[in-house]
Image 1 (cartoon, one colour):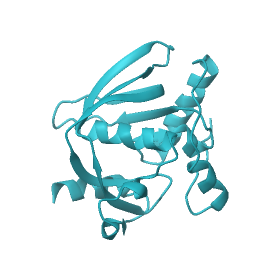
Image 2 (tube, one colour):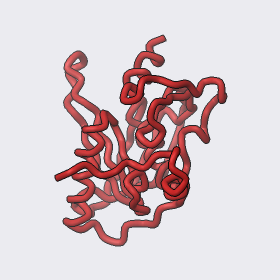
Image 3 (spheres, one colour):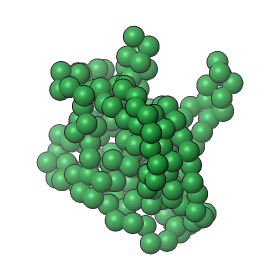
Length: 180
């Protein structure tokens, strides 16, 4: 299975799609789950941790997220496929750097909620309620923003924090900035 094309902001037609609000998924079907799995593969190959359907040209409300295994802290890999996600509770604040596969080669500082509770449907079409915090909460909020046509650059704490990094190294730059 080949990678899907990830839309980028430097193409005006693709930017129009990225700025569009997605519609709810009517039913989680095996075909839709297979497409989400293909998105997961595309995201992995691009060294990302999250990918929303609009980023591959599909204006439907779903995303995939995968946090890699953290052997140092004995944490297994976490993979999420979430359809029709909606934040129902949020609290706290965290400020950190974010990158985006649709804005390659750049990161910027963004304020997000420290903890959120999200409701949606899993890959079996069953209702789920997830309480997430820290980095995972940041990733979920970033992907949900994509479903509403919002880019991380819209949420910068200060435009001066928007800076170039080596394309493909956005995630590492985010982690290094968090340590500083």
